Length: 82
View 1 (tube, rainbow, N blue to C red):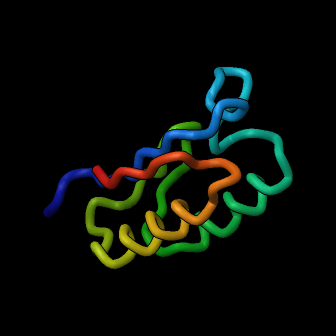
View 2 (cartoon, helix red, strand yellow):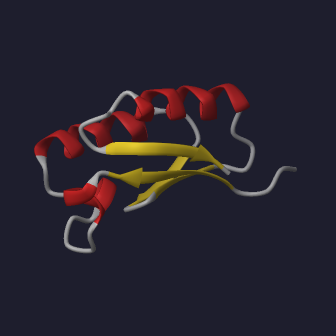
């Protein structure tokens, strides 16, 4: 069995500050983004700077989530699969 999997996200300036709360910001676009992210299979939870997936998550799912996040340029500056 594989270990825990996560996708680490670095957010843009106004979202990266502690007050900005990264992926958990109150911005309505982020709320919609979170709804989409939790619809992916194996997504466990979302934190301000990362998304945790089940240890058994398919690598294709991780890749799909990472590519989706990379397209969110209004929020994200970089994405790394861990």
